[in-house]
Image (cartoon, rainbow, N blue to C red; front, top):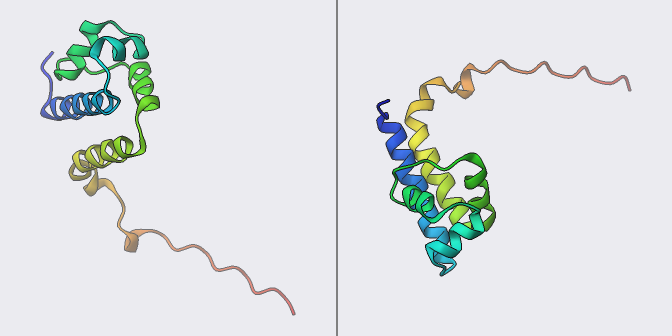
Length: 106
């Protein structure tokens, strides 16, 4: 199955995220793989952008990440998704207005 350009971009973002979390903690791939409960080869494939981590592995990595890594990942993913989602998001002017509450009797 051929990967889309979006899949490749997200794999690269994920790879960079894993590398930054690991190097930010100053630990080896072997130790990081142990913390993530995966084998080293699988971690290397993730870090090289050749594989996308399972949701369990991604959540394990997120648990180890600090706030700066979280913010950077969110920013990168949103930047990648924004052009695709922007046409689908309703504009504020097109949202229905809410009914006004009835004034309470004085």
